[in-house]
Amino acid sequence: MLAAAAALVAVAAAGCASIAEGPADPSAGKVLFEARCSACHALPHPQDYAPAEWRPIVIRYGREAGMNPEEKRDVLGWLQEEAAR
Image 1 (cartoon, rainbow, N blue to C red):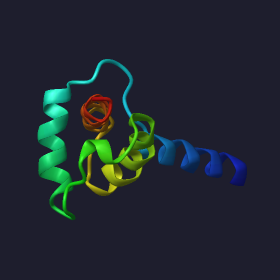
Image 2 (cartoon, rainbow, N blue to C red):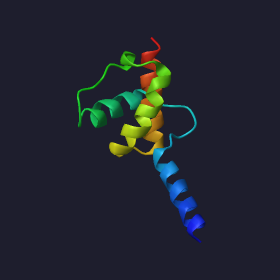
Image 3 (tube, rainbow, N blue to C red):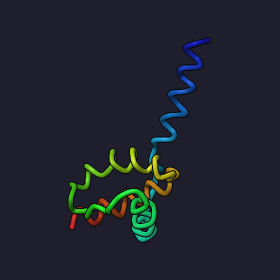
Image 4 (cartoon, helix red, strand yellow):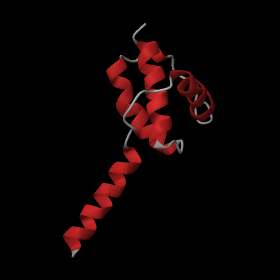
């Protein structure tokens, strides 16, 4: 019983940290990034990090900013696109 409860908590926590699959909408991601992230801190420039470095940042702080998996996908898509320029 305890193992089943622990497994349920792990699945729920993973869902909160997830980023939706599928194509991102970078233009929506830019708007979300500017609105949600600036509420807590100055915005970093996307090229401050390599494209691959943005994923764990978006997972961690997207959750704190109240983003759903689709919003995190869009923000990540925009950040990775800009970071690769």
